[in-house]
Length: 233
Length: 259
Image (cartoon, rainbow over all chains, first blue to last red):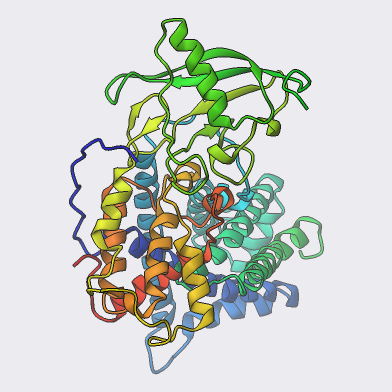
């Protein structure tokens, strides 16, 4: 230890200034998005039962709770919760990223990786690419604004039109692989952040992260690849 | 075996030289010959410094004290790995871990919370301030009590001792891509939080120590695990989970992140 005197820095006092609180926001919003992804993936697989089944499922999402509730009530609740989760996840990520940059003002000339995984290393840039993917994905398949058959079409038509196009399918596949990596690190990190890992559970938590990430990635890749290879048309 | 029979090594060292906190530093190349494989890494630097002094140059400043792996003073980034290729402190690293003719990059710990004092020596008083924010118990303990008067489960005492082996060297911060001191802070939180004596201040301790680690310009943990992989004492990532658990518990109990 050196004996250089240094000023004691005053800790920040805001409720959301703590890095661990930010990580918790990240973990909880991430879990909400994972639950949504599982439901979304199951819905996508309806494409294998044909256009009618897929379109009627899409219609059902808009009419859940009718006639007790007005049309699209549940859908809009889901959308608002998801929007809040995305915004909070993004805010926590940017805030922690900036803190990390402040924490190493002078970079190393030589720095080696000892044990970090590819998934943990790519989690920030991968997340940014996923954010762009989500925007494009909504414009393409939800709103139809950038879809080859436009917005005046059924969900199934938009699906087939997009994934019959090789560059669009390729972008989708790359994004889903990035999502898999993001989830593989994210699920482990969320468990750790919520204080639920220990040496005994480490294998189980890592196993869970691989399985959930794998199921979601494969589940989301099945439909576009089936369209691209002509199994669905 | 006499020293003449030991094959001596020659090394090229690229060492970070920086006059003081305010000056800009740069890597400077030195050659050392007659390095015995049985020397510790610090003894090899001593040999270099003796040569520099004889030549009228400024010797390389680096932190060191006990040289037996328990004080936590020494700490260098050697070829991009905190404490070098062995999972031990630099004083316990021997030159037999390297080969004749190796080129070694030697840098200080680089972190906003660890400003460079000179060359390879950094100011780690930020760690002292994290400790003084809450890494203690305020109950007067008096003389050592009868060991059986306060039973502690074996599992807890083992985990507390594991955490208490932290020597505060700062390798965790140095290795972390986020420059986070969370493994250090967590080790101190876990070490006290697992013992009965640490319970009264358990909530406020974790809140204050985390707030101080953030205020010292250390980063946030993103659970990458580089810290634990270079820790000379092998402190595990489990301690960070324990810190998170304690902090969330304190918040659930109605505390604000910083009291």
